Length: 100
Image (cartoon, rainbow, N blue to C red; front, side, top):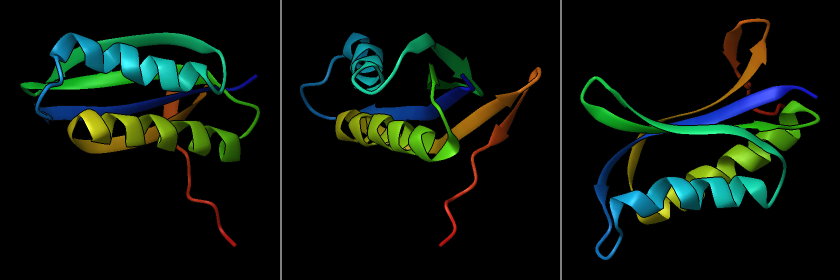
């Protein structure tokens, strides 16, 4: 099964949201759809970045999972630099938008 990841830079938190709750909330959403392989919070260029890696059968389903995670993150904080990527070998490539 292909491996995908969703990531976003997390900025200002919404009122009442505690920083330690952001990553578990993102993981919980992904787990409601599929198997989560890994998750992490890192600092990239001085900004917190949440990353959740997961399995999906195809790009279409991966987009659905990724968008659900991003929607949840957007409820909790200001986010930017959103991406959903697929692993090919040792590299990650953007999942392209679905074309009609």
